[in-house]
Image (cartoon, rainbow, N blue to C red):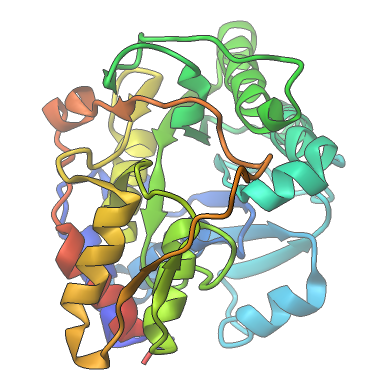
Length: 346
């Protein structure tokens, strides 16, 4: 399996973590949303485990778009340890294998998607979680991991939130399709753990970036990095006061494996909140890092415009002390992460 050297370095660093990797030996793992940024790293990490440690993990990846999926994974389609499951995750799982572990990583995550397809956004999380949990219940699954979001904490007054600091979400807002869908998915995990004994884990993450992310996708980080790649000025359509806590993909994936294989509680925040930046500061940082490209920040604030896809209130940053106390620690700082991401595209 050929990987860009940045991605391979990330995976080697992940595998150096003192995670209970041996728990994956000989296991069958089902992952939804296999084309996504995070799921891609999870799959590649397990394939490297097979190649370097002979772990014999069987990976089953769920995705909707067959041609896109085959194009993305064409290099590993002939392997006997990687299997595609082409279907919508909201439908009953079309597979007959007993599965040891399930990871629900499929979800629409873009503000534009929340507005254009709120039903699909909500159901991908709720029905997706239900179908995967139900399949797990009837096919011997012992462990289940849900990728959730800091948005489940809702509107609150805290700058940093722990796993117990819940605020309010307006259930009548179209924009709530995403946090409410994730909230219900989390509740289903709790219910299946209580009623059927599946060891369900929930990882709440925030802004994840790194090699393989979509550029110029309508989200701040992707748009800004797309500008950098194309050597374009970064045009800011707001005052840039919104705040971000960005976590590099390698650190997130390490945290997910810790959560799935080793952590004891059900819910963990997995986010690097040490380097919080405003949107404007991020743009300025990118202009500084890539100064040789001659790009600059241009402020262009439309009168009275605010996209319906974006939150109308401030979210607290994730306080990840619990995960860090049990062994996880983010390693890649913002500047290095941005450099690594851009290097992976060139």
